[in-house]
Length: 569
Image 1: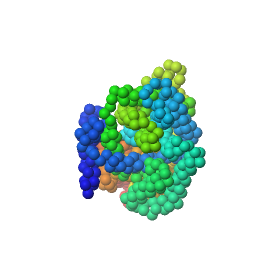
Image 2: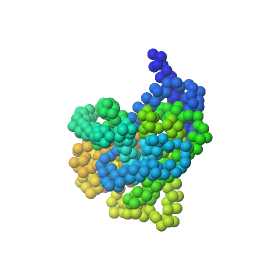
Image 3: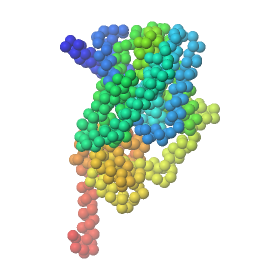
Image 4: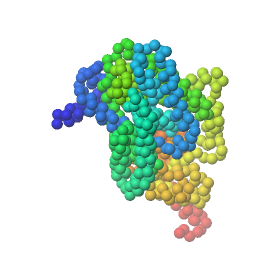
């Protein structure tokens, strides 16, 4: 009982300190993550008031947060989209890690620093500096609504490959003192078997479960979380990382339309545990000495340089654009949580010294805060670097960027080929159904440009058979809307008025859509003319008022009949 009380007290103190410090950070216009870490440092025994003594419990909860985060990342990984990137994504994912490890391993000894002299120190430093923080990057890119941009997709693609590299290294790690090819191949084989098992069960078992409980969103959510922890448990029993299991579990159900709903409902739970993750990180911050700070500064500078030389040139060479190359490199400018896990395991195997572990931990924390600002101003920094490179004769006029430029200047949000960009219709209700029928009769060529987003998967087959694209979206959960391509839409239409919207209204929906679809014309539906005027003044392009349209139709119909002395039926 005493242990439970201690755990509850430690969690309570962690949330209180994290909240207070994050509010202060917000007022000072600093990243919230900084508040979480400082809150943890103030609670710990190294730099704070020694209020939290059960650090192991906090770390356990933060690990759950990391597992949920990786599960969500897996849900967001669209293998079809990655496959469309084809060789480019695979080339970038392979070269980024291998070139980074090789460069750091070769160059670091020439720095003359007081770490890296033990047997495996160089290898661990090279691996640690080659991995970026999935947790920080995804959260910040989602906040900036850049996760679905080209640079965002490249960033997430690299993170996926880095996670795979990290898991492969952890599979080899126990055998470093006595590396045997058979043991290494066994670890790789287990990973392949886990992926094959997860995707097979997902296809033949989960698909039927989801179909059976399609009308119960809560059961879909519980089934998904159950699957996440089941695969995590299997991965742990097989000697792999639980985080790897969470990633595979998410990827294995990403093809289903319920993925977006799972994400939207897990966001709040994930953020709670993620807060504790950073508090736990702050709890471990040692009292920094000038030597440790100096070593950390050198390591961070090397990490930033390595990101630039191993990512930007590859992306430029792959004709993805100079600016996208710089943006991707800037987005990945931090050290991964996986690096801390790998170092902790390395310390347990006596591969590295405690001093190296302390230096990398300090570097990770400083880089986490620094990268928040880098991502916040990534476009400004990339534009400056792009101008400097242009002076050397390297411009951003690749084949792909030229197409984007033409699309951006073709007018009316077009692609330059006379076609309208994607139109997204939110909700498949009365007006939307009538709209679909009109399109089928009068403008079938427009059908393939329209996405119908609705929470009821029963309509999916009907709409796809007619040629429409269908996407899952729960209008009451704004997070589910960020996964349906709003960022690239030219027009977003909600055909449901407040009388039928559940859990939200058109005012809140307009605020969300303005952030997620900044370049789109937004059309909403209202029952009252006064409310319609307010929505227009708040930014809606047009508001449909069914009662007004019906009244206009009746007036025109009756007056036309009276003018022609016709019998009005």
